[in-house]
Structures are given as structure tokens and as C-alpha cells.
Image (cartoon, rainbow, N blue to C red; front, top):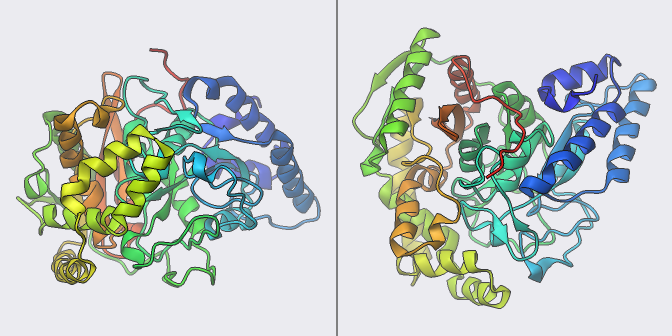
Length: 464
């Protein structure tokens, strides 16, 4: 069986557990696929084949002893370069951090290992994980395997590009303002930003931000099937005492009616016609699967929430962040910080947190009545690569289009990107937003949408 890298993670784990194939077979296939296509997309920026094979051999040895290595037995996964992995640099796309070698796994990496996954390689991110585009001065420029003229997304652009191209079966990403959901959208796969507190995280190599979970980079999975997103979420969510925000909430909640509220234009987003068409198509798919879909004209405020999330993310310590970006000299990071200066500086933490409480109460009350929302991932199709650096107007266009990407994390809600199709060579998809800790509802609706068709994956990278 030579194309093991094509299989869903769930199918591959079942084959390995039943000893129809070995974990070494899967690792060898994954390494071969990486060697075959990574030079075209630059998604994986660090990997050690001998270590990968040793991990796989350890899984096979456990199986030979009659042990259960876990739900992801032998499945190759990739890890974003902004979280700690023992013995690797946690660069976060910065030359300034090239020597920040981790002495211990981040909890989410540790949970992958405990679930039996094989850590295949480290994936690229923009400098400081700031952007919806993926390039930096230390690791270079990541390309979208479906069309090199469009962004692979960011900040988990390496994870999205790798997963779509068949390098690993699950990609780890982090999401402050769309950094899992947007690469999934841009690369034509699926991605989940879970509820704050669902997946534990803690880095020793990168300084922790002091103001709590509202700006935390929440880890989440990217995968080619919704079921793989589900099993990855379960593996990644195991308890770790190092994360003070982790919550012991079951992955499955009480039954809720299969009802979805569709909002095509939340708070003045004004999406392009192709995005509207994808949303209405997804609604029809849900209805065909037995869901009730009702359209609403609007949601509670999102524009203010997006502005305040941006302040929590970039306004706290703005001058220090700008000084670090100037020292690094990364043009993308500088464009981001300089472009949002008027939005975030000066920064009043107490005022921002007070408004966050008020707006979040509005949203939680709304979600109590409407437990599942169908809305755009972005107001535009995936951007032309590096669009945010083109000029001031393009920068503003990008940030407006990402309204839902930025706003949803402000409320701590889960958001799932479901890829639904292609517009020429460009992917399109939709976003499902659920109540806190109801990722299960997002995934159930996501599977109903997925059943109506998704872009083919994995794919061979497309030349320019």
C-alpha cells in the first residue's frame, strides 16, 4: 500500500491498530510525500526523518506488546512552529528566536504524543503569527498548493498548505483572529478554533501575555475530513495542569434541536456574491440532511468586538511589539503593526475588558436562543498573496473582510471552517459558530455540509 499519506487519519489509525500496516510504513510514506512536494510550497520548515521513524517504531513496539498506543496510533501530524516541541526552536517566524530551543513539549504537543501520533515536522507561520499570509525572514514564503497566486492563509498557513498537500494527516494550528479557520478556508480543507479552555496550552520559550485567555492563541486542528477534526480535537483536549484556563468539559453535550440560523451579512460585512452563494448552498445541504435552517438579518455587534479583539491582541504592549518588529525587520509584521496603530494605540485595558464583558453577555444571550450560526468565514474569496502589503487601501480591505475571524474569538466561542467547493482554482467555504464548548454541534452540522461535496484533497501542488 503505497499511498498511505492519502488516507484520513481515522482510517490510517485503524489500519495500524489492526496491524494491516505498520506505523513505520505510515511514517515512511509521510516522509516520502514531504520530500516529493514540500519544496514547491515550503510548508514544513524543520523535520528530522530519523526521529520520525524512531517515533513510529515505538508505536509498533507498543502494538507488538499488546498495548493500545492511543486513538491516533501512528498517524503523522504536523506542529506549528510557534509552540514548544522538545529539542526544536520555537521561532514563531522570527530570527530573534532561532535559538529558543524548547526543553519540554507544549501541552497540545504532549497530548498528540499521548494519543499515539507521530510528530512529522514543524510548519511555517508569519513573523509573530500576526498575519493571514505566511512569509518571514527566517523560514521563507509558504505557498498555497491549490494556487500559488493566493495566500495559504495565516497564521497557520504552513499547517493548511501541508495538510491540503498530503504532508501529514492532521495539522496543528493556533487561532487568535482566524489563524486556524482562515488557512483551512484558503487551502480548501476544514479547521476548528475550539472554545477557550478546551485545549490546554503553555509555552516556556515564548513569553506569556499577561491579560488572560481573551487574547490567547487557542490551539486547534486542521484536517481533510470533519471526522479527522473530531478525533484530533479529542486527542488535543486532554488535561494538562500547566494551563490554568483548561476546563474539564465533556466533548459531547446534551441533545439540541438540529436548527441553524443563517446570517449572510453579519454587522455590515457585505460579502462578495461567491461567498453568499456558498452559504446558501451550505444551507440547502443542511436542510437535505434534516436540519432546519432559518435566515436572520443580523447578529449582535461584531464590528466593535473585532476592534476590541484587535486591541487586546496588538494594543497591549504595542510599542514593545513594534520595537521588536523593527529589530527583526520583517516587512509583513511591520505592515500589520503600523496598519493597525490608529485602531489600537493608545490602549486602555480596563475599558476594553469592561466592553468585552458587556458584548459577550449580548452574544451569550443570543446564542442561548440560536445555538448554531452559519456565517461567512471571510467577506472575500481567499486573498491574492501578500495583498495586505500592496497599499493602504488593500490593507483596510483585508481587515474588513476578516470581521468574523477576529470577532468570534472575542466571545470565546468555537468556530469551524467547512470547505465546500471551488471557484476556479480558489477554494470557498463557510463558518459554523456554536455555543461555548459545543464543538460537537458545529462538527455535526459540518459533516452534513461536507456530505454535499468538498474540494478534492489531498492534492499535488499546482504550478504558477
